[in-house]
Image (cartoon, rainbow, N blue to C red):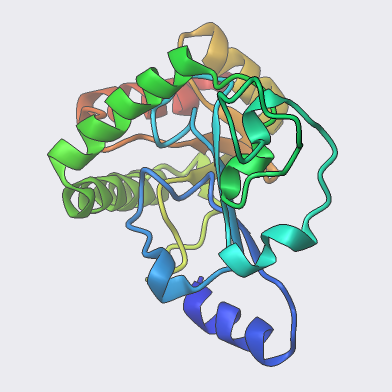
Length: 216
């Protein structure tokens, strides 16, 4: 998806753009300055390899005052740590949206996983993720019992590949694969594989073999 073009169209029409980037951050390179979105949100437990319970949130600075605050706490005030402060002023920064104590355990875990991605190189991560998607495309197309549901058109796919089995209902196929230890998801009318940059091709082959023979 051409996010920069979408953001520009929204800006021309006075529409605020919020990007749910959970299926991209950590898999594909993302340049916030180029996209120029108003808001970006993403949980950290998917492609960013973080733990459950911590998400990222970006808000354009000039829009912070337009968001209604629904929760309040000690960490969101401007004078955080000044417990003798008599006044109560919401922080000018995005910390205004962090009402309570930060989840430090998850923060350190996500920091470590992001460091791994950064050390590997985001361009390398993206390249390897897309290679595995294309590999899945070819393998699925070569299997008469499987039907590829994800678009293989250039620029229209990322790390998620969805397929179905001609003889098995997708929910049952998903349950059978999970019982065999294959981590997948039942989405979009099919079964979804999402190998990351480090997933061995042998693991992909084994998972597909189980999908092909699931009706036996």
